[in-house]
Structure formats: C-alpha cells, structure tokens
Image (cartoon, rainbow, N blue to C red; front, side, top):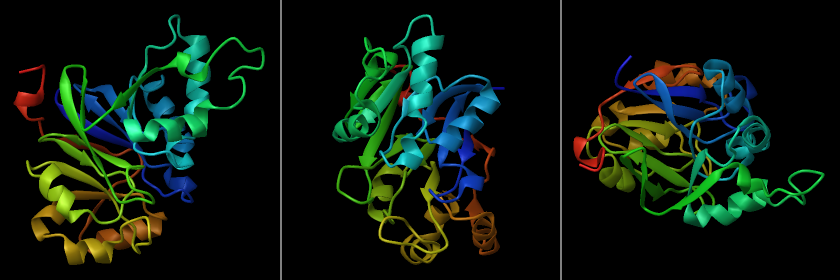
Length: 253
C-alpha cells in the first residue's frame, strides 16, 4: 500500500467512551508514521490494530482524554524496549510543562525509584514547525480553554488536524490553504471550548466545509444527525486517504 492515510482510533468527546478518545495515526505507505494524541481508549484501539504502540506521537493538549494512555506507554517503552527513549514525542513548547504536570510529575515513576518518567521517551519541544522523518510539519495555537495550551497540526498539502477547538476560520485561511483534508473538532451543539455544527455552517465557506471531516462528537446518534445534514463524519477505525503532501516540504527538498 502506498501513499498517505489518516486512521481514526477514536472520534468521541471525553464522555463518549463507545466512540473512543479522539486520536488518529497518519500512515505512510501503509505503516504508522505519526500518531496524534494518546487517550486511553484510543491507545487500546491503536494497539489492537497495529499490535504495537505508536512509533511517534504529537500531543495537541493535555486534557486526560488526549493523554490518559501515557502511563501504559511508559511501562511498554521502559520495560519492553531494548533501548528505551527512542519514541519521539513532539509537544508544542508551551504545552510541555502542562504535560509534565499531568503525566510526568508523579513521585517516583517506579516504586523502586531509579528512573525518570521521560527517560522512556524522546521528548521534543517544538515551535511553529518541526521535522519528522524528513518531512516538515506545522503547528498552530487553536481556541480551546486558555491561549497557547492547545494546538493544531498541519501536514502541508495533505492534512490539517484542528485538535480541540472553537471555530477557527481565520486560521484555516492560512493553515488549510493548499487543499488539505481538515479533521475538525465538531459536535452537533457547540460549547465554550468546542465547535458546533451550526457555527461551522454559519462561519465557514462551502469549499472549506466540504474538506472537513468531523470528529470529537458526543454519540453515534449525534454523528448520524450530522451526516443527515450532508457532513462528512469520521467513524472509529476509519482509514481516510489523504492527498500527497507538498513535495517542497519533504526530505529537505
């Protein structure tokens, strides 16, 4: 299998356990390439599909439905790998202290001591862009709770993953200007930290909405209601074919 794919391992909000935590993996030529977030139910689905943990992670923000799988990953990476500390974990720099408070700051990562939590990973703070396996990706702060605590991810020409956010039409004019598929946080009804379908339909131009694939919704029934309104709605386990990334940002060219 060649090309680029986005595989959803969870599409629900924090309460929608049956849909899984919102989490997905970008695949390259049929192999897992970069996984976005690490919620508990999403990680379970990821392990069941691949038979092994993610090869690399990007973390959008630190609500527990997006980072609740880290303790399981620590155990695997520290005890089951011959050389711990090889899994890249890309984290926007302003999110690093929040992530450490959430998952890395428990007294003694092991009861017997002798190890720090982050020894199991290769923690890489990132700014507005970063490189992964010769490919350049971009990050951008979104509208979720507090400024610069939640970020979206762009694989130019291929994918924009909004992460948890309110509507961000102005940002998408900049970060989704090359025909990317847009995986967008959206429920049937919005709230102070998440987008709602009425808002997107009111604020986004039709061309932008046509590229959106909606996730982070509350129930299977809610997802079906959004489909009846003509929207593309992600399903758990769905594999979505992506456009080829822009060649100029690949392999240093």
